Image (cartoon, rainbow, N blue to C red; front, side):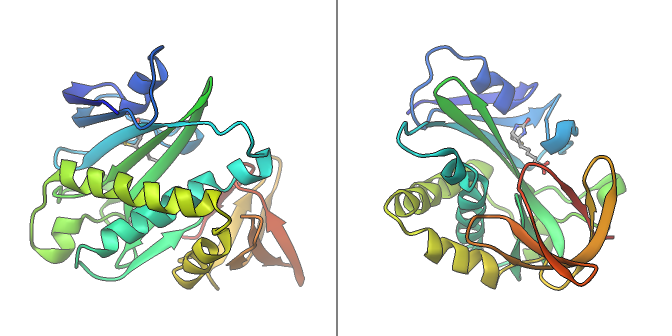
Length: 235
Ligand code: BTN
């Protein structure tokens, strides 16, 4: 495992994706990203003070696709667990890839695929306190606790926790992780809009099912939505 440190880079995910000599758990971390990326092609803007990092995870040949679909959720539990060690308030997991702190987003996760590896990118608002247009919806560890933290330490804690959660997952411990996701489920009982690209459905989110899909009550019916196919909004 190598650590690549940058004062400034376009995106730590893009950096690792471009390397031809990746090894398991190679990591890139930056103080500033000039072209940070979020899910669905969104830009991820983050002022200085955040932990902006990515690491490579070697693909296990034997795991079927349905299992890999759960990977963002396994990453989510790891972020949740690691951040719970930092006393700043109430943490929740928002399916599929966000962690909330005191009802505001504190971390986002972007999982991408290259030949033989997943690139797992994580942004955590650590010491930053200005959020511009995201003011009402985002927060940082520092803003909630009044303390400051070392971003790289936070990143390393998350990777350490991921190693534990991932080995549990590979050894058949998914139901324990799922239990944790559901007990900290930010979306539970919230009204949600589901953007299926050609139409929008409205419903009330319920639990995360054992296959990693989100159960939503829509027009009196329980429907399951898959990780990749939808965008959820709730405000
Ligand atoms: C999201 O909330 O949509 C996911 C955001 C993921 C941001 C992180 S920051 C480090 C890594 N590099 C990127 O360009 N994106 C991820």
